[in-house]
Length: 74
Image (cartoon, rainbow, N blue to C red; front, top):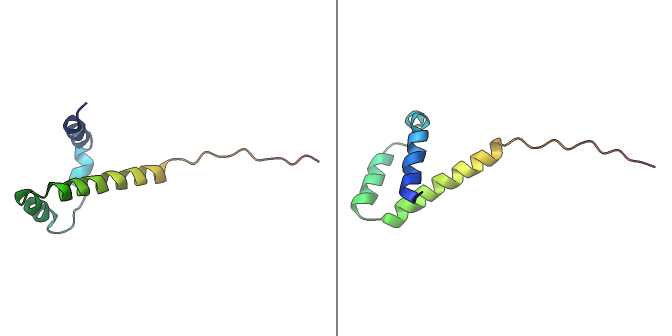
């Protein structure tokens, strides 16, 4: 799967959640300005930040495996 296919798949798989997510005011205009001025690296950095935040959120929501109680033997 190419990066473009992966992004398209992730957008489709998460479309409902993405539509419900509020964005900061003027974010669309900011991204539009980045696109128009050719600031590809800045756009990629924003995508990477979103990806990293998603990973961090996923790690936080993972269940921590319960450790079996240890018994001390004399």
